[in-house]
Image: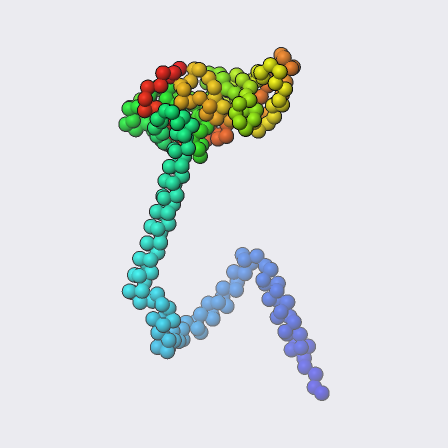
Length: 287
């Protein structure tokens, strides 16, 4: 039996090993292989066009590619355009439905008073103030209440200056905002509450002492809701949400009194839209 030369016997394993090594090499090391690709194109390119013509003759593009004809391409283009418009309208409808729910739920906080809620975008900040696009709404004036949130029940602040097209809103968490009085909701019924005086800390939170009713030993814990109850604010702003308790500790000067840190349910430093709460009738307590 005639033995094959060693080069012939080991040519296949050597080829496989070389291919594996080439696959693992960085791309920049394989530039020299471009010479082989160029030689292959010299052989393949002259016969590529005749083969394509033969293929199209045997199997026309109108059969192999349903979108090949001009009419079909036009129809597909129209279909994609209408699909895009449909998706846009669906998104717009969803946003409008959310806005309707938002406005109606916020107005339901004061059913005895007719409230008009006007959403407006925040265009920027000026020191601690939000710059809000007011437009040509004449009813937005100084001390107009501003809320945010999905249910339009999170107190944001109030207007401090109303200009022709914009206004300045001072959030309750701004460092130079005035202290506000609130109540900690001790139970779900809202009948058991504890008074608190909160001051902004400049970091998006409010902090203050809690005064519980005499004889009330209910424990104040994190997660409890704090709502506004301050005579310096209009009647239609009362019981809006100030935030939720984030931390409970003892007051430094009175260890037996609790001190709480409250964080609004929405980060008031990064909102992009606010809602003006405007009573349609005169509200005697504009503060």
